[in-house]
Each structure stands twice: as structure tokens, then as C-alpha cells.
Image (tube, rainbow, N blue to C red):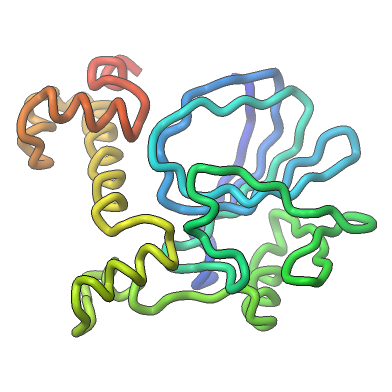
Length: 221
């Protein structure tokens, strides 16, 4: 194992999860597509870099070096920075400017780099200062309670707040469910039928695009 990590959930309405980790060796694993965006804080040799990592619309490779401490902050779908439109950060990793000391610049102000244990306080401050917002329409649709709005309006709200369409988000979620079934020993054709794929080639294309592995590779893990 080249990285050791610990993840926890959060009771913040803005946060999906918080993860901290330490890289034990150089690594270049395949990462799946990701519908959520993150703030990532990477400490290496006494310097900390703050990254805004947008949603990833396909699987890809991530590289890291040994000896880094990393804090991943995954935001809920529908949470967005008022001054940093999420669509501009899709499929990208953007460094935010460092400030003096363990701080970084965001929305014309400096912010202390948070820790694994005080993320909720940090995020509450962001929301209080109107730097972070949450789109209730996205949240309602995702919880199965769609509002009386036109499909075009809902699509616009999803693109604005998440950088993705609702269909892309659904496809990623289905691919993850398929991968989970295969890892649990479900036969490939049973996974095809259970999740509504047209056939095995359709499942294969989906998993290679969103997860980065074929059904057979996933089943062997």
C-alpha cells in the first residue's frame, strides 16, 4: 500500500466526507470519475498547497510522491463557491494562492488551513461569509422530490452548481453500483440485468469510462 488514509462522514449540510492520508511511497493509481468537487490540502516538506479539484468526467490516473500529508474535503452535490463557478473547474486541478503562514487566499480574504477535526467550523465560516452556498433545487432533485420547474431550468441549475448534468451524475452512480456488485461476486450478466445495461459490452464501456477497469478486472479485485 502506497497511501494510508482515514475517512469520516460529516453532519454539515455542505460536506459529503472528510479524508486525511499520508503517502508512504510514490504512487500512480487509476482513480474513478468523480461527481463531487474537493478542496485538497497537501503538506509536503513543511509547505502546504491548497487545490480546488473539480469533478472528473472520466476515470484517469493520479500521481503522488512519498512523504505528503493530504486532507481531502469532499463537498455535497449542489454546494458551490459563489465567486468560483464550478463548471470552470471540471476535469481540472487548480492551485489557490498561498498566504503568509498556514493560510490561503479565497474570495479576497485569507483563511487558515483547516484540520481533519475542525472542517465543520471552517465550512460554517465559509457559508457565513457567503463564500459557500448550497442550491436547494439540486438537493431536492437528488432526494427524489423534484420541484415544479421545467427540465431546462433543472438542467441549468445542475450545471451551475455541480458542473455536470443530472444524467452524468446518474451514470457515475450506476457504474459504482455495478462495480460494487462485481466485487461482491455477482456474475457479470446478473449485474447487467440488475442495473439496466443493454448488454455486457454496454456495461464494459461504462465501467472502463467511469471506473477505469473492465468488469473482469473489477471482479478479480
